[in-house]
Length: 364
Ligand code: SF4
Image (cartoon, rainbow, N blue to C red):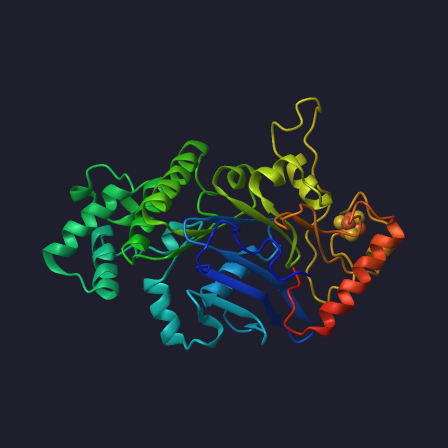
């Protein structure tokens, strides 16, 4: 596969903030090797939001944790995986170096803000501590800066709220407080893993708007992970659709919604409420995401795919450019569209063999 295919923002003249190549994160058990993330590649540039969407179990959160250096044993990132942040290879970092980058360069917002907030300290203390450790700011200056940060995330009456504990905040306010704490570290990259999933739709919309405003002000690169196609549509510039550890389709957001190509993406879009007005019931994709415990020598979506045919069980699809600029690609044996099924399957076989010959190739 073309290693630049849809990995970079073509308008960006600068180096990507985050550049991931052939990321493979596995979990070893006594009986098997689970390939939670299986050879994915992508870039994110300053001021850009890349959305990763897929059902639960597709490998999205493991991707986020791999970037953050938070994969615990029995999980491991395989050699030849590359995660470059501002040009630095993170897979070679020690725990101490990772600790530093988590504090200063990369911020992470989880679904549950209480994972990031300590219940026994006031919100103000926690923001001030982040300012002290990461930016050497303390005393009154830290208090003023903490108030400013709470203002930035639109928390009303910030001087008072600074003295309150996390349990005194509502769910939406807690998530804002976490974002303020992340901003205290002045990150270049914000990784958001289902940050709005536990919130009601109004608060969800407010948090998305807040992230967009902060991104514009600070030129933040954002990796936004969710199972929710509606949220992805709101926030992303580009979208990578993930299934069983692999990316199956990559496209700019409008293109993905207007012209989906992979049967899995079509299934996800069909399941969005409101997109099937003429139908009585929402379509759902039958079955669950399989646990990827063997090498992908076939299409992992085949057991659930309404368009599957015999070869899907035997040939692993590679990414095929859909748009001329390569920004849109899909990994499915139905493409290239202008070839017969036999020719298309041969195309995938050949590309698959070529990728095997290039150990550091770009797989998904
Ligand atoms: S390769 Fe086959 S099973 Fe996989 S998505 Fe395409 S048609 Fe469906």
